[in-house]
Amino acid sequence: TGRPDMSRPDPTRVLRRPLATATAGELRVLDAAAWVENGARAFRILTRTGVSAGMVGGVPEGTDLREVSGALLISGTVRHAGPVAVPLASGEIARIIPAPAEWELLAGRNCLLGMRLEESAGVVADWLRYHARHHGATGAVIVNRAPPDSPAGSAEDFAETLEEALNDCPGLVVVVVESAVPLGKPGLGPESHAYLAPDAPGKDRMTVPAADPWRAPLGEPLIYEAAKWRYLAKARAVLCLDVTDIL
View (tube, one colour):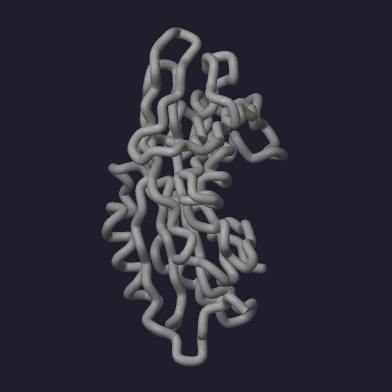
């Protein structure tokens, strides 16, 4: 069936993975993935917002450029290993090193996909445990958006504490994706501030919160494509749900 054998589940594993962020000229890359397909090396390069197809020069035949919500998805195949060369309209050549896709980690699993800002490991563990027991979740990709100086602790502490908290819920595979750059909308304050609530009354009397790109509402829509092409392409099913929400 392609599903993992859960009759004798292994201990839950929590794995940390960084986004393959890079900057080459005007090409600001959020993530990039590569895998072998039909004897060639297929790739997806996913940019940050503010990158358009007009910034890319002539590309080889078979390479596809697609603008998605203000960002750019570049896909294609190459016959060689190493960096993928992307010609830019400026005349530069951007050389992007894709991370290897790890589809087998979550192949055949029922997966959750969620964003974590500064929720505690205990809160996230409760979220995972509930959906594992009541809905059959067996895997998850959690994008850790917390800033490096978060009072909630370091990314390493979060992952270690999360794995310890899931000792009573064996069999899960959890990939915690970490970013070296903020993923929020530039110019906006933290999404937890009342000013950013859609129906908050009295906004004309509020002080506009200072910009906080780490904690602002999500501003990099291709993070979902990154999760798919790095980890979820062979998952049995994927439920996109905030780590504070219960189905």
